[in-house]
Structures are given as structure tokens and as C-alpha cells.
Amino acid sequence: MAVTYSWNFLSHASTSTPSNVRCKISLPSFSPHLFRYDKRHAKRFAIAVTMVDTRPTVLVSEKLEEAGLELLRRFSNVDCSYNLSPEELCTKISLCDALIVRSGTKVTREVFERSGGRLKVVGRAGVGIDNVDLSAATEHGCLVVNAPTANTLAAAEHGIALLTVMARNIAQADASVKSGKWQRSKYVGVSLVGKTLAIIGFGKVGSEVARRAKGLCMHVIAYDPYAPAERAHAIGVELLTFDEAISTADFISLHLPLTPATSKMFNDETFSNMKRGVRIVSVACGGVIDEDALVRALDSGIVAQAALDVFIEEPPRRDSKLVLHEKVIATPHLGASTLEAQEGAAIEIAEAVIEALKGELASSAVNAPMVPVEVLSELAPYVGLAEKLGKLAVQLVAGGSGISSVKVTYTSARTSSDLDTRLLRAMITNGLLEPISSVFVNLVNADFTAKQRGLRITEEHVLVDGSPENPLEFIQVQIANVESKFASAICDSGEIKVEGKVKDGRPHFTKVGSFSVGVSLEGSIILCRQVDQPGIIGDVGSILGEENVNVNFMSVGRIVARKQAIMTIGVDEEPSKEALKKIGEVPAIEEFAFLRL
Ligand SMILES: NC(=O)C1=CN([C@@H]2O[C@H](COP(=O)(O)OP(=O)(O)OC[C@H]3O[C@@H](n4cnc5c(N)ncnc54)[C@H](O)[C@@H]3O)[C@@H](O)[C@H]2O)C=CC1
Ligand SMILES: O=C(O)C(=O)COP(=O)(O)O
Image (cartoon, rainbow, N blue to C red):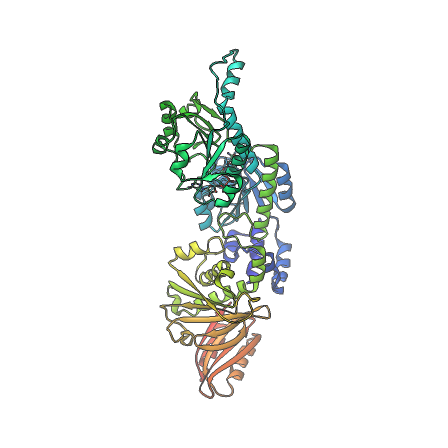
């Protein structure tokens, strides 16, 4: 386990390891703690470091402030290549471990496919990740991180700027003065005081816009089905239904992400439900507004004015009816463009990408569950146990027959709400799939990969008396509807069953089928069922000794004295086929299996 993680770290860092080697040994890890707990890992790491360039390569495809670049350069080779064509990006990407973008780079499925498995992190130096194909990233086990907080205030200030500039026709009046005109009556505006502003999407930016609009003496209402009512109440904002919000507002300000649910949420039908003469601001994402429908609503007078920072196509076409409309003011996606926000976003994304490349789970991960560092550190030994139990269980399946139904049971003195099992489930999935495929699984793609392979993993939590200080007492993995090449691995209810626990900080094997065993999960394991009689340990030991295979432990669990026993032998080296055959031929041995960990 630890070795696998360490190699993965190298695979992130290496610029010269062949990609096939990388794929086979790569398993993105999520905690530095996991790098440390096996001495062998440190040895291999040291050896490998001398052979390869260990600095990862980070491609920055859009302007990033120097403060972020400087952080990146301390840790990686940084390639700033701005204005790449889609084909150039796809060509370069196979040489990169990370990619940092803003809103202008489309990170498509093809980018992930062409990365050949090397791309491990995409960093979005901003909030919106609608330009990144998240499904493709997840399917390729590539973590996506963003910089969710650095540009909140800049976007909110831009929203307020557009609101006031629009209400007083400042952009049009400025252009008119500059063209030598003095049209005072043409540019009479509307007042904001006492008007109702509906914020659609009451998240970070939306609530900051609300705060500022209150300062302008506006009446602020909001629609956001997921926003906590307390936050709205604290700012003095009323949360309403969508229809209530849009039908009562004089101004509407959009602060939603682009999702399937919000795509073209503002369309002919919604415009028709608005108060006539409404004014709309959008500093959110292009695509939330159906732009053709907005042009119709502007022409018909339903919408009096619109102030837009974002568009479906950026930059918009030169002949865009929307942009050229006299009732529209437009800015070229400037919401995040303040010096302060750009520096903040550059630092925030550089830190997140470096964390991810180091194998830590970045706190701004977009397509992976957030597992707090304390939880990761506590679960580290159980993560190793989980993966090994998955590996043991799948290797006990006869003839590599397909597995479709796996049940994992966590026995713990903690209630299920106090036990975050996502990481454990991911590692069991990895253990189950790694011996039978070339797929590498991590926290990002574990559930997707299992689903894609038709593998249904159910989890059960058994509450027991014990110390809640230990996250878990036992983990049990059962595979249903399969035959086993080691019949004793089938438990009374018909499934292959393996069980383990963490003892002295190390993974321990405690049960196979209905038989108790008690060995450390290290090296590889030979499992034998035998007639319980003297001399067998010696027979097997001498077969292994002849081959110079070191036995690191041996345990015999009897069911009935002088009848049947399960012998578990841990070996440091892999015995030859001949040696294994000889073990199978020892007369008292009824069945045996060799399992790699
Ligand atoms: N133009 C620019 O330069 C910038 C644009 N943005 C954009 O602003 C938007 C908001 O950013 P943040 O406030 O940081 O994000 P956020 O995640 O804090 O807030 C988004 C809010 O939208 C809500 N929401 C999601 N689906 C919804 C739905 N169907 N109906 C109503 N509400 C829904 C969420 O519950 C959440 O509260 C994002 O789209 C982001 O890309 C952000 C910064 C700069
Ligand atoms: O943060 C966001 O969501 C933005 O839209 C900002 O985009 P930008 O990084 O300025 O290209």
C-alpha cells in the first residue's frame, strides 16, 4: 500500500517515467501521512529520486499573477503558454502533470483523453468550472480544484458597478459625450433607493451583492433553494420562490453556477413572468440566460435594460444582437479582474494545485469528496487495511469470474454519522479492481469506476461496544454470487468473506470464510486448509526454505483438533510456481491459495 502511494507520488513528479509504467503503479494518494508509514517505501523513493527528474510540470494556459507563478516555480517546472489552440493544448497536455486555467480555456474530454493518464490536477483560477468537463475529469481520475473565495468581492463589486452604471446610463452617456454630443434628456435614469432587487443564487457573491445593495437602500429579496435561511435573515434578505422573486423585482442580479438545472433558466417563459421594465444584471456564467430570448424581451420592453459581464460564447460574435443592443451594456468578463482578486486567485490556485500534486486532498476539490485532514490522518492505517482486504477478496474468486456485488461491513463503536467511509470504500474498490484490471482508482473516480464495471458496493455499519477513540474495530468484505478458488473462503451464508482490523497501527487479517486467522497483512500470503496433524508446518517451511523464500509469519487456526486447520503463511518473496505446486502436493493439504498484497 505505502509503496504504491510513494510510486504514485513519483508519477506525479516525474517528467520522464514512461506513461505505461506510471499507469500501472499510479494510485493518487490523499495524505502525506500515507507516504511515511512504511520504511520500504522510503527506500524505493530515495532510489527512484536519483533516477528521474522529480519536479512535476504545470502548464498555465492563461495569464496568472506572478505571486502564484512564483509559488508554483518553487515546486514544479512551470510552462506558461497562453493562447494555445485546442489542438496545441491537446498536444502539450501529455507532458503535463497539472493544468491551470481561467475562464478562457476549454478543458474538454479530449484534453483528458490525450493526457494519457499523466494529468492529475486541473486548477481553475476562479470559481466557475463550466469550462472544465467535470465528468471526463472524474472518469480519468483527474482532480479538479478551484479558487472559490479570492474573487468573491471583486465579482460582487462588479455586479454593483453594473447595476448603478446601467440605472444611470453611464456607459451610453460616456460614449455620447466622447462623440461630441450633450444629450442630457436622453440619458435620464432610474433611482435605486426603495427598489426591489432579486438576487438569484444567494451564495458567496450573491450575498455580498445583497449586503452592498442594502447599503444603497434597496429592498433585497433572493431565490436560492439551497441557501440557508439564517444567512439570508442575518443580512435582512427575504428568501422567496423563483416566481415570487422574478415577478416582484425591479432589478434582478444573477449569481448562479451553470448547471443542467440553471442552463437557460432565463428564457421566454421566465421573462414573460417578470415585471414589465425589469432591469437585469449578470456577473454569473454565460448560458444561464437564453440570449435570443433576452433580445426578444428587450425588444418587447419586458426587460428595460441588461448589464452583462458573461456570454454563452466568449468573446461574443462581433455581430451579436445582444451585445449591440442599445439597452445593453457589456463588459468582457471582468468580474474577477481586480489586481487584488487576481493576486488572491493566483495564490489560492497555486496552493491548491501544489497540495494536490503532493498527494494531499486539496480543500477546494470540486470532483472529490472533501475529507478533512484530521479524518485522513486518523484513517490512514485503515486505508491500507481496506485496500488489502479488497485485494485478498478478489484474488479468492475462482477463475477471475466477474464480480458484481460486494458488501462492506464496518464494525465500530462510532455511530455511522461519526464515521466517514468514502475513502475506505474508494480503497476497497481499488483493491478489488487493481488485481484484475489496468484501471487505477482513486477517491475521484472510485465510485464512477465501480459503477462503470457493474460493481455494486453496499456498505453496512455495525455498532458495537468499544472505544470510540478507534474509528473502527473490523472491516469485512464479502463478495456474493461467485465461486472461490479456496472453498474455505466461502462463509456459511455463501459469500467469499475476508475480515481484518488494525493492530498496533498495522493491518491485520482476522478471518477468511468462517475461519479465524491472525496474521499481519504484509508481503504475500499463502493460505492452506489442511488436516490438522504434526509435521505440515515443517514440510511447507522446508519447500519455501529451499527456494530462499523468507517466511515473515505463520499462523495455524484449528477448527477441530486433529481434524482441520487453516494455515496462513506470510512470505517476503514470491515463491516459484514449482514451489507452490509442491506445497499443493503435501498430502495433508486439502487446498491452498497464493495471494499477493
Ligand atoms: N464574471 C466573473 O468574472 C465571475 C463570475 N463568477 C460566477 O458567479 C457565480 C457565483 O459564484 P459564487 O457566489 O462564488 O458561487 P457559490 O457557489 O458561492 O454560489 C452559487 C449559489 O447558487 C446557488 N444555486 C445553485 N443552483 C441554483 C438554482 N438552480 N437556483 C438558484 N440558486 C442556485 C447555490 O445554492 C449557491 O448558493 C458562479 O457562476 C461564478 O462562476 C464568480 C466570480 C467572478
Ligand atoms: O471566477 C469565475 O467564475 C470567473 O468567471 C472569473 O473568470 P476569469 O478567471 O476572470 O476568467
